[in-house]
Structure formats: structure tokens, C-alpha cells
Image (cartoon, rainbow, N blue to C red; front, side, top):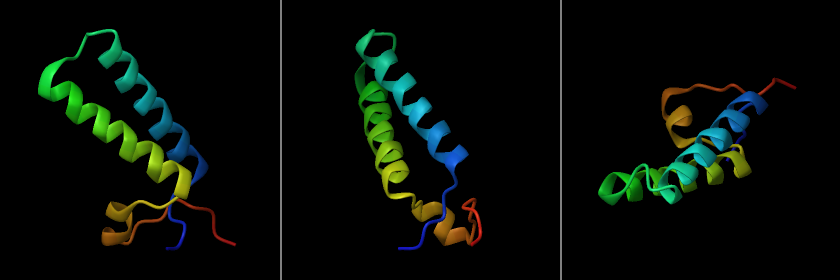
Length: 67
């Protein structure tokens, strides 16, 4: 897998994931929507850690800096 995510993308995804988790545990978002957002938060964090987004790859997008 080639890197296709830049630093700004990674930071934004981690911040969004943190917001989702906080909203879930503060019981602002509950039920099925809460669980879906937790799964999405986990996917965002995983994508950020490996610097690869399959959706970007399928559309040929890359926000990573060129060497």
C-alpha cells in the first residue's frame, strides 16, 4: 500500500474520531448511530496510522507530499 494521506488529513481524521468517541461516551449520541460512529472513528484512526485510505485509492486521490 502506498501512502495517499497527508499530515493534515491524518490530523483531521483523528480529531473527528475523538469527537465521535466523546459524544458517544457523553451519551449525546446513543443507539445504532452511536455504534456506527464508533466504528467509523476506529476506521479513521486506523487509516491515519497507516496513512492509507482505500476510498482515496479507488478515486486516484493522494494528499501525501510528493518525494
